[in-house]
Length: 202
Image (cartoon, rainbow, N blue to C red; front, side, top):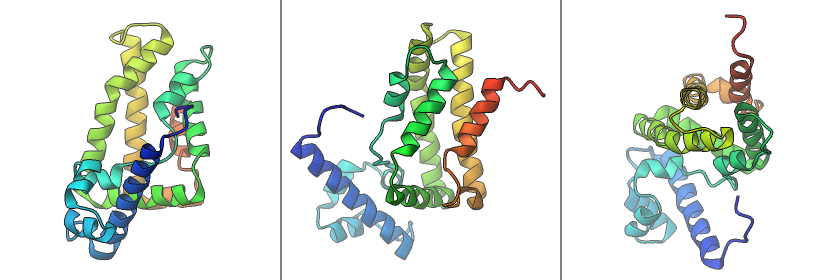
């Protein structure tokens, strides 16, 4: 998160993005994802269709955008220098989840349900995770004081990203695993703990 207060224009932009997303999610639930057009969403919000596309270049982006007020990579980079890579990432995840309000957690559940149900959105979600891999690897290398092509850096970055992808896919396949009573980060944290221990029992 940036320590600076957002400007008026940034606040207005965020409010409009939230309005577009909340309207889109409601219409997807009421009419179906495929049946709902961007023009319908724009009309409900009271803006031009091109305005929706300016804020969300594709329809899947309306589901995938996360308005939570934290930046996981920034949290990771801000962890104390003495923490190892996996510890720092686990703590960054915990800090991020801790900032979520009950309303944000409910929105996260709704978004996850749509990702699970709509192949187009699920594919875009995986593309987003894949595209973030390079930046995350650079952050890991920076923390470890090594080059991004160091075999250890590549291995640990790939393992962490793989855990994030697999645990989310598993949650999508088993909706009960993402019930409101369960900490949404618990499965990821548990898998990261196993990685940190080195799978000594295998």
